[in-house]
Amino acid sequence: MIIYGTAILAICHLLGDYLGNTLGMVLGVKANVGGVAISMILLILSKELLAKKGYLPQVTQFGVLYWSGMYIPIVVAMSAGQNVVAALSGGMLGLIVSIASLIGTVLVIRYLNRISGDYETYEWTIESKEKIA
Image 1 (cartoon, helix red, strand yellow):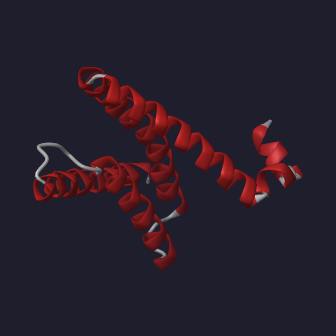
Image 2 (image 1 turned 45 degrees about the vertical axis):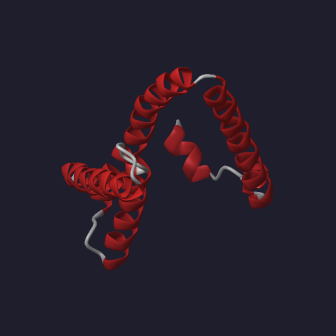
């Protein structure tokens, strides 16, 4: 069922939040360090592991994929808003680091797309065209 996908997402989120806070305490920072990324990695790993062992029916996999697709933009937007406030209060250095990380992200994504080669050569099959229509 799709609701099981929501349960897996909730468990991964709670674990990621806990591990991010623990990592922040270990590093001496009073913040959650990487909790969202840890949550997403746990979600991907748990989905793949459960699917390979046969414990995750197709409908539940759809639930995990749906919520992971919803989870990423929402949480990234929330944390981006917090990061903008922190960057603006940090002065010019925060602005420079923000722009540098944006440029770095764009360049890495372009590089990964270029070396994969799948993007330009992908061909739509009859089956996938029917699903879209």
